Image (cartoon, rainbow, N blue to C red; front, side, top):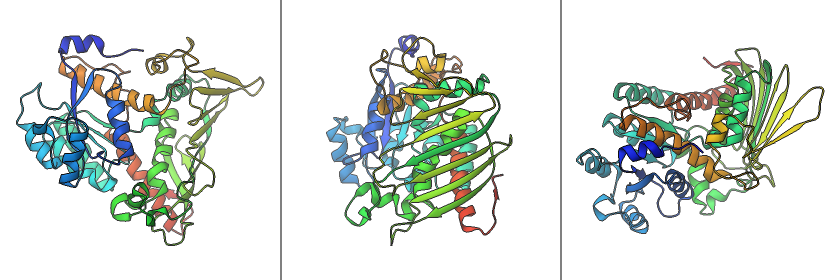
Length: 394
């Protein structure tokens, strides 16, 4: 595994971060914290861990944050950290709140010159996304979006295969993300994760499409590099009384002439987290499954299917950098999240020691990827509501 160890020695300290959201009872907050510190060169030093001041304070106490950096609100954290000198203040902020609470703190920290890591989808609207792009460019900060599936070694290898022409010209992509956890209306039964994801005020204009469809779009873009030209979408809400979609089928047309199918569902009985992708070209095809992430399949038209297994010596630089254990020892969800954070923090570290980040270090989803994902959600909803067969993406 390649890491930022040499730069850390030059820097003579760990990268410091604060977190907004992710306090008590938060699943994803703990995932982000564990991922961020997994390289051993990053530490949590501050937090505003809930929108409820009392809960924020208690959550910070749970994590043994210093009292003076255990903030009651993100506004208080921004004010407090801004007063600290370089080297003591946080180097970046990680925002892991529900979707509706992304834009305001992200914009405020960017405008104050702080690097930002944010969960997906990045913001609610393309207008907000464009404002963030302009702010990131104006203030020249590092801005990462945690599409964690890009952190898997086999996903990086799949991307390298496409780039190298191993599959030929791509003409078909099939991506799916079936889940079954919202088959019943559990948002009315006190299920916190379901409550905000099915609430338009907090989740945004889409349900399943925003929550997991955004991952599918990002995975297709990351592996293939294809750009969507137009789409035709059908959103469905199967559970009576639910206010947002829980199932979606989307046909895709890409600018190179390729075609795609994207299906997501959170009411697919018996499914857990079945994200998978198949890419077919003029020479070969590939297949990857998130629930079996250490294997990557290569399919030839005139030969047996080949199975590539993570951790072996025949992989490229990106997959090798993202590999932390020898073959036979499975790596999965936490490690993939950690790889996204590793590249973001190595990029921050490189800037702090005055050198240009390498291409491998810059391998993480950016504000531009986040903005494209927001646009995808909007276009899917627009298409589903339209009588027009195809909705242009541009």
